[in-house]
Image (cartoon, rainbow, N blue to C red; front, side):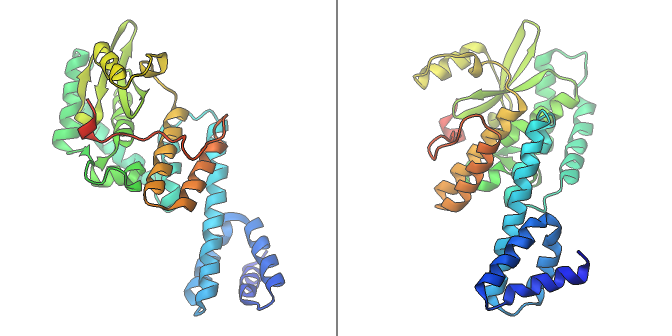
Amino acid sequence: MTNKEIKALISLLEDEDEGIASHVEEKIVSLGEAMIPYLEEEWESSINPEVQKKIEELIHKLQYEGLMSKLIAWEKGGAVNLIEGMWLVNSYQYPDASLENINKTLDQIYYEAWLHVRPDMHPYDQIKALNHVLFKLYKFSANTKNFHSPANSMLHLALETKRGNPLTLCVIYMTIAQKLELPIYGVNLPNLFILTYKKDDFQFYINVYNKGLMLSKADIDNYILQLNLNPVDIFYEPCPNLDIVKRALRNLALSFEKLNEAEKAVEVNKLLDAISDEPTTAASGEEEESDEDDE
């Protein structure tokens, strides 16, 4: 379609015949995200609040369906790039968030960390040096005051504000560590996402939410015992990128539920279902705990 034809099509959203308006909406949706700039232009020029609302709903639908397709493609492609997956989670609430800017910020932190973390250091000293960069120089910290805010699941906001939940802070920490070629990976503990340093038979754990506190296997054993759970491998071993993004989506859905934004929670759970083997139920999300409740 030409620009003139697209604009003519969008102008029919104001048609008083509901059948025509409905057909136009279907046609616009079928044309995909490329229609969004034209819809935004129409919204700005319209003085009809009902039409503006209809345009807003159409833009959201187009963005949501585009996000769904991209997330499925990311998963089908092997979920290789964790930052891309987390950026897609961002895109639900912030469709204009820039993946390029996220990567640039992470690169800047990496360059600073590279100056402090040397390959010949003992692993404990490497972690201490990385903790110094992230928590002293860059002043990253746990967001305990607004713990359940959806913003805490947004990687780009965590990078901007230096505040986040356990998962977003761990993703930042792990990304920098892996750029430094450190064998550090995510671990799916109940209620608290942590990291592990694992190389050959040498392994310990890192609680990024508590400023990079190093933990032993015995500490993890005690944590699991306090939760009255049976110890299983998933609580000790590295998890794949896909599991991390799923957890980010669960956290986001729970945040919306706590804010009584049921429609958003349902939409996020549908995104989760699209990349999961098992359908999500309303109560299947996994709530992170605040710093006061953690070890």
